[in-house]
Image (cartoon, rainbow, N blue to C red; front, side, top):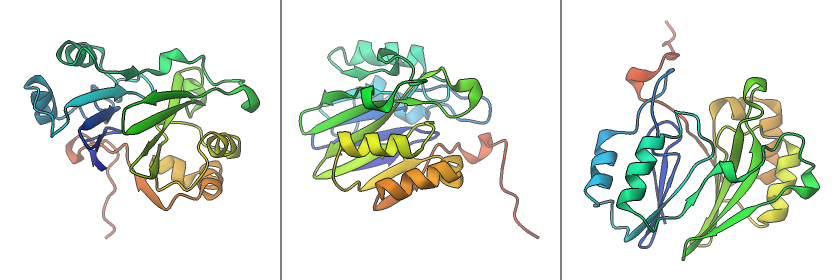
Length: 211
């Protein structure tokens, strides 16, 4: 299994001859970057890495994660691709944890489990959102997206996908928050990767070097 981070929250997974794009086809703006042109060119040329088949999924449809035009272009090129969209869920707001559902996408050598989750931030709480667990090559990788992480979600993840979690992809603010830290402590991933990062030239909040 190989994983490649493009920009923002974009991830590309390849498991043998099957590829999965997560939050990879997106627009930019507001301090985030567009999908790199070389990735779009490879898709257009149908030369994506070594994958014979390639699928799509998105944590949510904000424009730093999703572009409708790019997805339509992609589906014309890959008409048999599976697409796991968050719009299949009712928003996670006010869902009792005991009735939370999961959606499992069979990708041959891998499985993708989608959890309905709440987008972090009060102004985004009703935005349909899902977090994802990719199970492949004997590993579990959790892709959090922009979810509100807490102990309730940790218990749900553990029930739906028991066993060790090899990697968790989280935003910086999720790692910095106390509920996020409690979530990560509960699921105890072997590796934590910070993502959702723009290119340097698009970053409107650069970290200044200390004098």
